[in-house]
Length: 326
Image 1 (cartoon, rainbow, N blue to C red):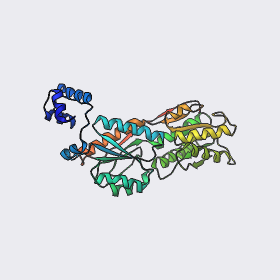
Image 2 (cartoon, one colour):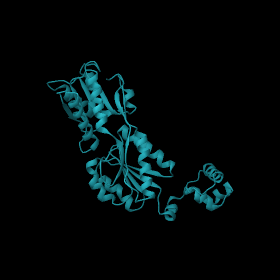
Image 3 (cartoon, rainbow, N blue to C red):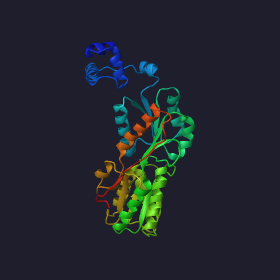
Image 4 (tube, rainbow, N blue to C red):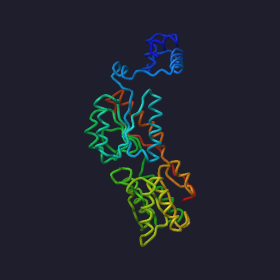
């Protein structure tokens, strides 16, 4: 099906169809509706290469995800894709693992004009290396909030959220609160640990124990919890920096013959659906994951449309969800 046939089917000019495909606001609503209906009926797929030659845009966004196996990352990507499609864009997804070599390979798409911009969820420590690779291309850092710099970003206040967890655990009587953290090359890991330690100080709790999970996985959370259980002084509460780590910790606690939350309370982070699947249901910090993704696309499209637009840093709301694990 060609654009000419779409025009005949909709009873409009070829120019009108072209304006609809290029998201022009100059099309009358009635004509736009007729064109969209004709496209739907005929299952028309526009020639992206031809459009790129006409507009110097590909209508594609590159998304570098640190770990697509992480439920939080997957939810953010859902939001990115939804907002991108709503604005006439498609996404190319790269599971980078915060590996610069893998990221470098994907970023060749920028120089080849295959994509119009990039959204990253890589470790914050990798950003200087990525900056050199990305150059002046439109770029938004997602879920890793930056206090300064030229890259627009969107995230939450990880310090406040983590400190709130410690406050709530202390309110329920917990005295020995441990932390299961992840790789400190991620800024969120450093910020959540800062919030943890600040919370202990504010609550005047002397006990402090941190175990670092090798990855954001169920098995890594279980392994980290086993180390905490084997310590000379056992915690009576555990705060994990992801729901996946918390779920693994809960299994280790159960296998040790201990009860949740009577012996050890557990709180996670992210607010993924996993938190409602475990037993007992997991208390957690809920991030607006899909909204973070949608906002990242909005920031990126501003940069694509106006490369000189100012850098924006958006801080989203978070919520503590109280369930039976704490």
